[in-house]
Amino acid sequence: MNPHQTASDKPILFPAAALTTSLLLLLSGCSKEEQGRNYTIPRTICSMPVDNEALASILPAGQKITVKDRSYPGTKGCQVIVDGTLIVTTVQMWVEAGRTAAFVAASQSIDKVDRSAEEGRYQYSAHEAYGKTQGCVDTKHEQELYAVIQAPSSKHRDPDAMKRLIVSFTKSVEESAECTSGAGR
Image 1 (spheres, helix red, strand yellow):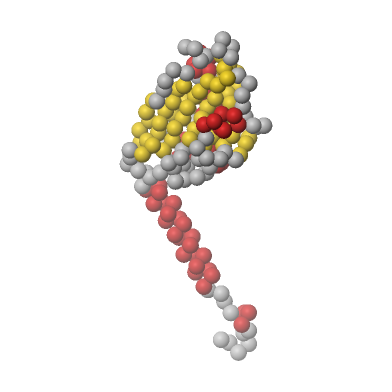
Image 2: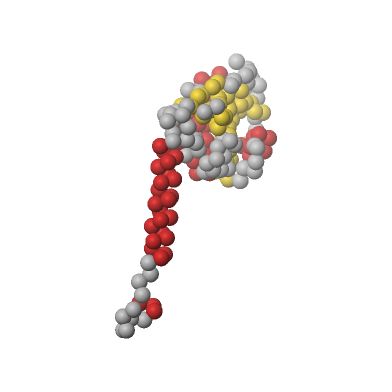
């Protein structure tokens, strides 16, 4: 130490080195995830365009992605499977008119859905999202169409991504034949 240098004038190397090491570890973790994804992120799920960047943020690394139709009367659904593990489920379902996205979330959610957007039109959490379509009404059966996305098996929790996903998915549903065909096809 220089005789004119005080303890407070000493360069601080340890925190800078620790910060550099932490940043390198963080960056290597991100690149590992990207390198570990050997499949293309879908731009559609069940023919419905979705925000694929938001979808990418909840999908895991893996070798193969499969999207399977899982529809039945009154409900159109799909499953997104990565390396044999179900990661994301989408559903378009007809519900009694006058209900809300909060009602659908309460009846369908796996865990607590703690966020809301557009005056309650969308309800979402870090791995589930529910949206009420606009203009998708079956007057004969007095029902309205809702969009649901669940990703309970995903280890990636991202409420912002889930919000973007449900908004894009709900808009796609509103533009689909499902919206105009009604529940009693």
